[in-house]
Length: 245
Ligand code: SAM
Image (tube, rainbow, N blue to C red):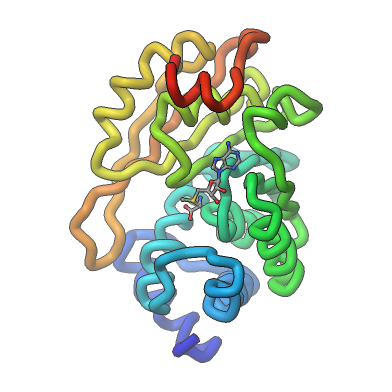
């Protein structure tokens, strides 16, 4: 970790300004610092992320996830719950929990050691509105977590048509699915039209944003769940991936 806590806060504030994001509170900034520090210390041990250079971590992990947090924050009132599917090293779940302390955030990943890493990091950072659970989404969505979240997020887990079947069964009716996508967003949305229909979801908005100093456009795709997920979904993973809805 090249930055001291003070340098980190200054650089984060500069990059947030550049990105058009509002300034963070000092406790939120401290929590984000610990997230980056832990990633730096444990990335190799836990095989967490290819992005390790501190400035890149700030832009491609932290600022990227702050855009998702801003969108969720605008829609969430008190006492709401978010599930991040395929959270890996805690993106976007940990930054979202760090800056939205009123929101309760669950992270899910099929790799148990990544969940251990996320829970340890949250605890060290004082992020107490967070818990990571090791499970496969398509299995967990058939249990008590089904239909119990106000928001479900996902970044870099699967193509949108596959992702919708993995994620939207967790939503309550009226809840929102927020998918973080790159350049192929339009194409993926087209491919996912039939999945959205079968899963009772309505497309609400595509929000475009750019990371500071980087040209490639990024998108937040927002869908609302308007009716109960049919009992048949999610199917098992080989069916979901071989024959997306
Ligand atoms: N979301 C993180 C990010 O953007 O940095 C991690 C992305 S990583 C490429 C994809 C993660 O999704 C992996 O950690 C993998 O274990 C997890 N994953 C893939 N399929 C899953 C499933 N069906 N249920 C739960 N986790 C899954």
